[in-house]
Amino acid sequence: MRYGMCMGIDSPQNVKIAKDAGFDYMECGFSMLSRADDEVYTKFKTALEESGIRCEAANCFLPADLPVIGHDYGSEKYVGYIENGMKRGKELGMKCVVFGSSAARNVPDGVSYAEGFRQLGDFLGRVVSPIAEKYGMTVVIEPLRKNETNIINTVKEGTMLAVLSGKDNIACLADLYHMVSDDNDDIRQLRGSIRHAHFSNPYSKNNLKREFPKSFDEYDYRSFIDALEYAGCERCSVEARCLDYPTEAVESGNFIKLLRK
Image (cartoon, rainbow, N blue to C red):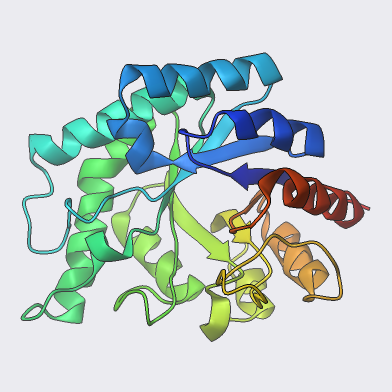
């Protein structure tokens, strides 16, 4: 398993901290990557190059102002946004884009769940997949908690949507925090379909919703990682919040060294 650190491209100073803490790659926000001005993008790219690490993944694929269901998702507004983000991503070494984006994928009132599901599959297969193929990327569908989105809440549903797209470069993600309706056996049953993962301490003590993983006492992380490895997933990013990034990134990095054993 290779472990990454999620961060914004507007925080280039955090790249070296994560690299020195032992992380294998960075994961940034796709929306910010696509829409950032050249100065912000260049500073992040330079920080990666100077630290000798790649940004292999991006999350937050679509912003709220680019909703899919019930909209003209094949228009230039969508295509241009995806193209620009993936073009930049390729320059950073990106291989994977995470489609969580609850506000952009929610099924609006007046549209059936089945129709919403169909449109998401069409968007991924007809619009997203060809662009991702052009830049050598896989797009993974992130199941989210039911209080965050009204569609795709489990890894099995995410995998069904990937299958509906009909494209090999559309797959599924497993996020420990969101897996309240799943268990590790669900991951194991989807061997070959889980291409990326997120994890964090889901039991925050500081009102952060999710914290950096730092100890086996917090959660049974080992079983989660073992299930991912059985399923063939080779990449897992820390997606969390913190109060003191320089300190907590190192603490999390030290814990990940134990997970590698």
